[in-house]
Amino acid sequence: MITLKQKRSKYKTGLALSGGGIKGLSHAGALKALEEYGIKPDIISGVSAGAIVGALYSDGYTPDEIGEIFYDVTFSQFAKIQFPVDGLFQMELFKEFLQKKLKAKTFEELSIPMRIVATDLDHGKSTIFEKGILIDPIIASSSLPILFKPTVIDGVHYVDGGVLKNFPVGTIYHDCQYIIGINASPFVAKDYNKNLRGIIGRTYHFMSKANILQDKALCDILIEPENIATYEIFDVEKSREIFTLGYKSTKEILSHADLSLFL
View 1 (spheres, rainbow, N blue to C red):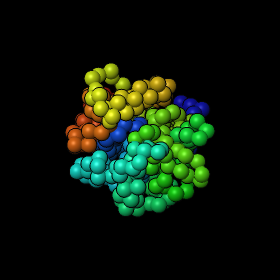
View 2 (view 1 turned 60 degrees about the horizontal axis):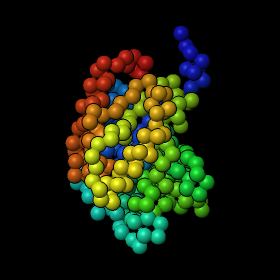
View 3 (view 1 turned 135 degrees about the horizontal axis):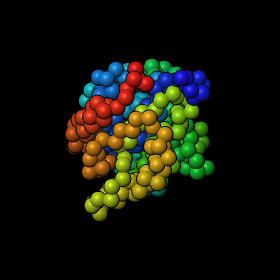
């Protein structure tokens, strides 16, 4: 029986990728597992780290290649400290790095349609980017407030998409028959470092917990890598572990799922 949603849906399989700092590298591991099961998304929606991984994947990089890009990076390599008027660090070095990696310069050049969510700081709302220049929305979606300065696009200040929508399932739900969601930011009230980075990371977890529950319920398959909450968003030295965790957890979940809908 063909449902009304199937008749109206523009895409068969949508993939939603959450924010989560370096924990977002679990998205790349999950993508590797999905490929091994013959599943490739027809559209991707991403926030913050999910926007970065999703854009690289849509640009033609393999999951393993995405992992290799970030395995040996450090936080200080890309975060240029500045006088803290609107953020402790600039994103220019990371922007230049990512811009060199991306072959596509616009959304229209991507091989898989992509939607990126950022937070409009001036008007207090989520904004979905899906057309035009690609790099600025990615950086905007990844600009964690206080830590990084806002990104200005067409005169509007944008910050991390996770402030209001850390799991962007709803942005593609009505256009897809089925949704696979990968959440790299499940909240667990564990111990944390009482330094600036630890407090910012803790705040990010509280923030994301408040705005993902509804989106989780919209997923046909929800993947939350096992024990991903034990990692901090700045644990860049554990990037290989995080990639592997995403891969193994997704393989386990898919082995027990009905995948006939997605093939």
